[in-house]
Length: 134
Image 1 (cartoon, rainbow, N blue to C red):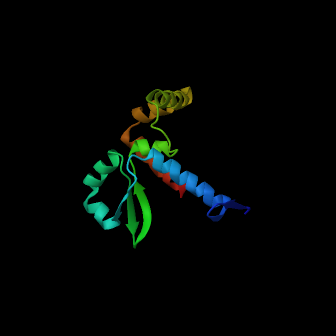
Image 2 (cartoon, rainbow, N blue to C red):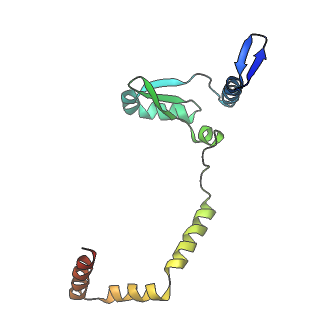
Image 3 (cartoon, one colour):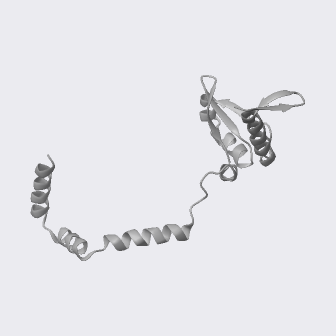
């Protein structure tokens, strides 16, 4: 990596980028300090920790003294580039498209015959299907 000379010494470009990212995250954060809890403590105090996260805090969860997870509000998650909440209209359109593809004449006929089948016919078909699949 190419060194970058500053008044205080030599910094790598990676160090400068790390500092810039850290400054950006701190600027976006409402609360500079993060709460750290063990996994066991997170299990027993989940309700209050969740409320703290919703209010804008960040909770680091450790296991065997190593950070393993972070509890954030959805707003903080989205600000960090997480996926936004799905749009209800988009989900409805996707569902309608799937339903339309499933409603072919052949599938309608098969469904109708399944509902009209006698218990004996259903049993025979179940055994045949079981034998076919092994």
